[in-house]
Amino acid sequence: METQTQTTVDRHRRIILFPLPYQGHVNPMLQLANLLYSKGFNITIFHTNFNKPKTSNYPHFTFKFILDNDPHDERYCNLPLHGMGAFSRVLLFNQFGADELRHQLELELSKKDEPSVSCLITDALWHFAQPVAVSLNLPRLVLRTSSLFCFLVYASLPLLNDRGYLDHSNDITTPLLDGLGYQHLSDNNHLEEQVMEFPMLKVKDIIKMGFKKANDVVGDVIGNMVKRTKASSGIIWNSFKGLEEPELETVVREISAPSFLIPFPKHFTASSSSLHEQDRTFFPWLDQQPPKSVVYVSFGSVSQLNEKHFLEMVHGLVDSKQSFLWVVRPGFVDGSTWLEALPDGLMGERGRIVKWAPQQEVLAHKAIGAFWTHSGWNSTFESVCEGVPMICSPFWGDQPLNARYTSDVLKVGVYLENGWKREEITNAIRRVMVDEEIRERVKILKQKLDVSLIKGGSSYESVQSLVAYISSL
Image (cartoon, rainbow, N blue to C red; front, top):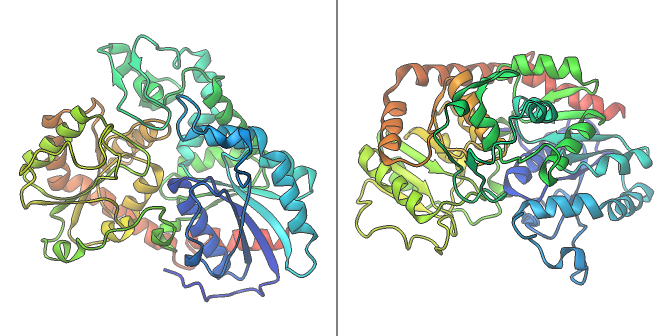
């Protein structure tokens, strides 16, 4: 890990960073901020009051809270919108945030007693920031918090819609947009067919993303994200060349803006940006477990299961006879505060359940043998960074794409693509814990990543290029 005291240039240039206010987006943005600070830049963070980070963990940054500061602003009083869950804030801020963002940027640009602003870096989903930045003649780079592969699929949504892949109302029960529930697919052989444009995907993977049409409200946000990412001054990806080289070649060919692939987990941990209290009391227990003997289970900060599927998880874990560390976030089981649905005495002494954990430290622990994940990109990439094979249970959005890429392209995990069935869960856990080919492949990926970080390696050079590029703006 790099330290925050490193400096390679004078701290006379300032960068304004603006993350989306959700855990999976805050983590990489603040890791990027730490990295840029370590290279000598002055850092200002724009953030909403909603899900605001613990600023005391970042005394070296300046925080400005914007967009939702007025408690009487009727646009934000009744969030979340019906049926839209967490995504409602993305929709509303993109719709109404331009004037305030422009005002705040004008204030920052006019300050004479602070370093000049080199650029604005926003989450790619803040697509409204692009025309604002252009109007102020301020270069805007974007941080894309999912994979290059996901971006290419998202860029193809209009084509996939024209081909009829998104119109399967009789084939699928679509979950709420905040990830509630697992999408249940009907028994339809068509869903198992390959997608012509992306042969590694099945039709059901496209449907599981949760877009009813490319031009629905969510599809509209994605479409604008793609369009304005392409129009930006640069794209920063949480990835590395050896992981997604074919996709990188396509991105470089089709987008004129430069791309910078940086594996943030290898530079800074995300523990300081956690929006949840982290439990560390389990580490003495974990330290006592044999190497590669424990299954780590965590489904992120938003996903939710009903009680029936939760119990299938419980039985699948218990029946696997493997030791496990399971993060069960309060509210993870729909209708429960925490563990009310857990049968008394069923878990025994084999496992530990906590409300939240410092994930990167857990994945790096010698006792961890597999990661059962919702296949969010941060979790997927952190697992690759630590050489841990995966069991994949995606919910919506990019997660089905990441799960398929993990299992069928990288071949470093098993995709539980038929929902929550205890027998399949048990079999997947047992397979991943003993499959030497899967373990060897993920070990090789980790080695490639480690080599890329050495001077002259692709990830090392990407950081250098990003620093030089921002310094030239």
